[in-house]
Image 1 (cartoon, rainbow, N blue to C red):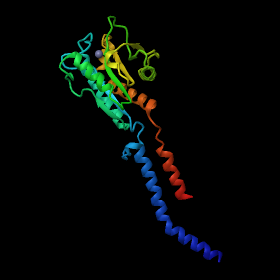
Image 2 (cartoon, rainbow, N blue to C red; image 1 turned 90 degrees about the horizontal axis):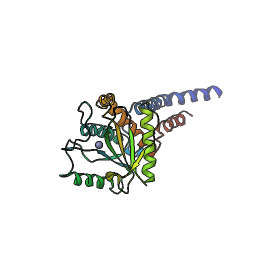
Image 3 (cartoon, rainbow, N blue to C red; image 1 turned 120 degrees about the vertical axis):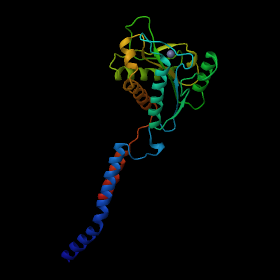
Image 4 (cartoon, protein in one colour; image 1 turned 90 degrees about the vertical axis):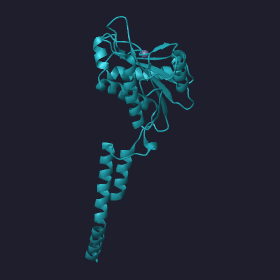
Amino acid sequence: MRIALFRSCKKRAGRYLPALVAACYLCAALLLFYSAGVLPTAATNLPLSGQTFVVDAGHGGTDGGAVGENGTVEAPLNLSVALFLAEELRKQGAEVLLTRTGPGAIAATKKEDMALRQAIMGTEGVTASVSIHMNKHTEPKPNGPRVFYQEGSEPSHLLALALQNALDDATGRERKTPVSGDYMVLNTQNTSVIVECGFLSNPEEEALLQTEDYQKLLARTIAAALSRYYGVTVDFAPAAQESCAVLFS
Ligand SMILES: [Zn+2]
């Protein structure tokens, strides 16, 4: 009887073994593909799903913005960082509104251009806006990213602080305090900040800001900080391991 039971168990186990092995391979493959970023994830599972950000590339058209010591013009660098930032945010599930995607201004006059950017940044339902610029000083020494926010806007102040800390850490600089002031483009009801990525008046930084690697580092850092600030934690891997444990228990 004991032998028969043993045989029957063995027989049953033998019948289910291929299914169990297949399930194990499936779990392992799911974990592997997920960690490699191959598996398409439902948009609702991404950290910034349901959030909308405005990414504003400062200047454009005849308004090139600041000009560096060696002639670098600000506007194209702003656009490049803004496009990388939009890409990073979309990867994390966010909706992104870009004020411009090409070299031109977005309205006929500077006044209309600024008013339109301000209106886009103030769109209802926007989580936050980040305006990308490059800085300039009369002295060559100042360097590093600086974040600005509208005086009196506490939500913007808190976001500016989070971004300033993240950018200082990522670029290996001492932590600084974000700067408040009265900036037309930030004067909206929505949370909004300006990120001055670095100083074109510092020749070393002027060269660095032109490299794709540094532009991507800035974009990744801003996106990661926004994700930590507004995102939800996605806990896919432990859930997958749990379902494996259920299969084998
Ligand atoms: Zn600027």
